Image (tube, rainbow, N blue to C red; front, top):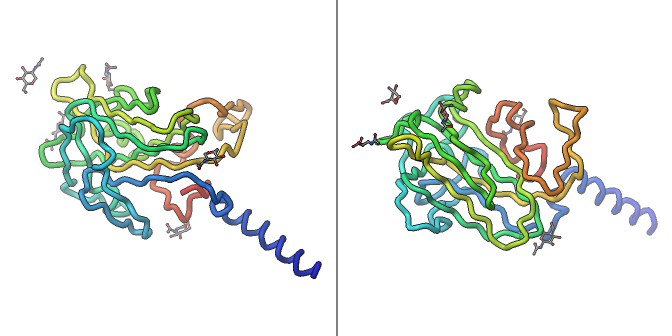
Length: 236
Ligand SMILES: *[C@@H]1O[C@H](CO)[C@@H](O)[C@H](O)[C@H]1NC(C)=O
Ligand SMILES: *[C@@H]1O[C@H](CO)[C@@H](O)[C@H](O)[C@H]1NC(C)=O
Ligand SMILES: *[C@@H]1O[C@H](CO)[C@@H](O)[C@H](O)[C@H]1NC(C)=O
Ligand SMILES: *[C@@H]1O[C@H](CO)[C@@H](O)[C@H](O)[C@H]1NC(C)=O
Ligand SMILES: *[C@@H]1O[C@H](CO)[C@@H](O)[C@H](O)[C@H]1NC(C)=O
């Protein structure tokens, strides 16, 4: 009997180590939105993405469009080939667990879209009252990384309320500027660490407990699409 218990506990520990996600049984909901895509769909990893429409709250002057070309480096048509374009300030709202930290991932494919030249797009993004991107050009950012597409990931501190607003604001400094986004992920993240050591600055620990941080270590690996099954954080 004792041996069986022992084996059982060992297996349990092993499964916790191998699959931390399963251990967090009361995980709050995560979201994976394919923006500007009425039907949503499944990516090449078999992961489901839903349409973003029902999360838009502001009277919506946004436009849905599909990219005209799929760059060979783009790993999957979903969630990259559709985008939502915002000619004026537009907000998404998500029901969240106010005590939980979240990863917010924004995916951009600054390609050519009918009626939108993404090189002319500058915008800011405000999440939970915090400006996470300012005067952002997805086109310049992608060029800097020499990639066709990119992901920006932010770790958002618990909000102490049950909704998160994410607002896209076209820059008013440029005539005809617009904002856009191809996909949005919002993933609850356990407070796994009190001190995160930044990969590039090992001697400078960063307290992330109440801070909103951009997770630069992911951008250092190129900001490439990380398949959920290969995501070392185990949170995907
Ligand atoms: C909300 O998040 C906290 C902290 O991660 C967790 O302890 C709690 O169980 C969560 N509540 C729900 C309803 O998921
Ligand atoms: C997009 O705009 C840039 C800068 O204004 C311009 O150089 C480029 O030719 C335009 N691309 C297309 C496809 O119109
Ligand atoms: C926005 O960014 C562009 C490109 O980096 C830069 O040329 C421009 O001066 C910036 N505008 C503002 C208002 O910061
Ligand atoms: C902005 O662009 C529109 C149409 O291209 C033009 O009519 C308008 O005069 C421009 N405004 C400014 C401030 O440049
Ligand atoms: C996971 O990574 C391995 C090794 O890098 C790769 O061969 C495999 O295709 C990846 N799986 C997915 C689903 O991306």
